[in-house]
Length: 490
Image (cartoon, rainbow, N blue to C red; front, side, top):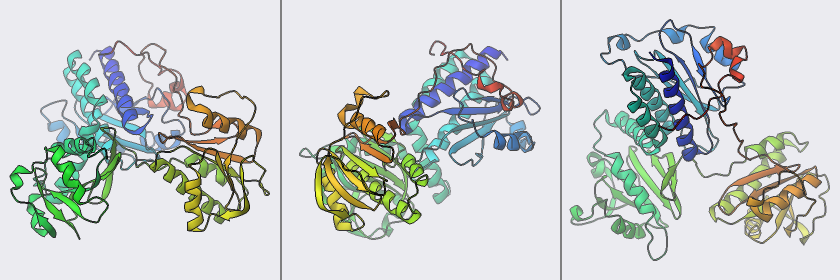
């Protein structure tokens, strides 16, 4: 096989995978471990160093064991060299992995980051499996036409990955006999979510149940002439959601039409769309699959990403029990600000005696362990300025003004709230500032540095080269030899 064709195929599928996953989950990297034949060399393509730090485990799995070389009999008997048999992932914490085996590419294992805010790894796993399938297909056919198509298919695979994951779950429950067609449901969910009624976005729950299980549902009312209540009449379904808004009632569909309004227990095998105004969640059997907003599906559970704050707390001398309570308080305030889509700033003061900050002072600090006072703090976070929260779990002030000298790293695109937090934290060592933007991004700032900022990966800049063997990568050769330019887009 033409080596240049192989390399171009790997490059384009990898690039498309990173782009697609970044739109679905936030900035994402990917890596590939592969061997063309059962006795061939294992190679590793990781241009953005996703697997850096995993060398000991990668070596243990692939170098100290030959288990990965064990060939499935079905592969040898397969008539088409591109037919791919799925390969289970490696269960590495912090990474999602899935692969495949075929006659054209004996072994593949694709990796990507497991973001802390994922609803489910299921769609990501299906996405990686499809990347393995397309690479095997491309190598089997050796046609540039297929490589060009593979790029676009992988990049735009989010909706299909969600469908594949849901269909797999349904097939397990129904033993390959589910009558629910998932694609029309996904179309309906996005279309309904974008349909306003008297200026309001939809709220309420729409449950999709297989026709075989409809009789097990406790209906409050069944609607006459269900043939006229088609699911694809999105405007009508949006109106019917008003009947279940802000209640325990659910609108029920068999995937094609609206059946009625029900309450109580529902069959375990169900697909649920939970509309919450400007966003919502898609669930199967009660488990979150993904969220949706702005006419797109996303992997995020929409909870604030405060991993860096948690890590900073671990480094402080504050008692463990108090650290945990402080983290819950901050998370609760940040989550409310995100839900209500308003900006907020929280100054977390870890000094034994809280510093004095210009702003609205309180006659006595407010105990934030009290649910009523915590709810008050959430409301005060809407006021211009910052909340001043001490390590004593008390609110010491609100509408606080943060000032400081200009520092490197300021970002004019982020506005005054963000840049003031950078300056103020740079001037005060024992402070952590959390900034919530009105469009939901959360920044954890310490010593003038935004710890939550997404890393900027180096652009590919070197000639397209053969990926290093596993031995070369483990020896360090993979650190510099994998950067590649973006060849002309397919």
